[in-house]
Image 1 (tube, rainbow, N blue to C red):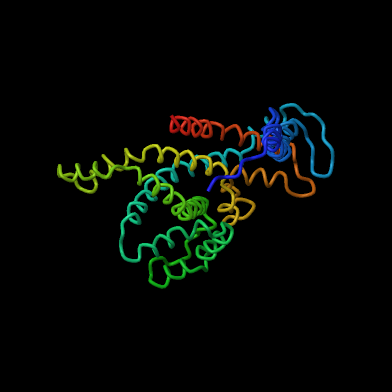
Image 2: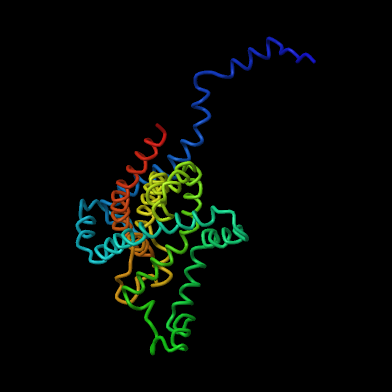
Length: 305
């Protein structure tokens, strides 16, 4: 059946609508959205970082006073140390454990769909709810301490939420447990690109599971492992919920279990919040996240080539 021919006048109207400015008109809503909700707040934060403005009062230009105060703040030193420790522990754990889980759930085994759901469930659960559950488990009168004392493993309550290091590593354990499923999905997609014939050739040469893992699997997903490591670095710098729920808004007993985001929230909250100092902390957080973000951009660019 012959298709109906378009009238010449309709075709000319369609062509007339595609002027040189048509693409710019289409991107205007997105540009306005970015300018209002991303660019302007970023510029305003940078300007406020040079002032002593507070929540309910105006401010004056104070130069670099906020940045000098920030460098002398012992809590910022603790926050940076906690962030570095977070990265050192989380990068290897959240790089290799999800890869091993992906290798496990990739196989067609009975009930493997159930285990995939179980491993991914912490990802969709609310971070606040999960942190509250962990707080209930790790409390001095919680399930873990009660179980350990009932079987005679310990004689007193283990101070998971009151000791500085135990609280910090409990928060790290929570972050690792919650992130396993998310990074497992990323590695599952990466494993699809690893050539099966390389595994078969290595097996014919007598290579075992461990040797094939290090010589075939790891090189095949090396770019994904780098991407995951960069994402973990950025997330470690923005850590908040785990430490805030487990240790409280003050950063636990002694106030040393804090993150940079917790310091920003603490400085800006309240009717007398120091918005200028909080803005200086925000600029500092932005600066230290630029490095991993540049590495991620270069990684994506090299992957596109």
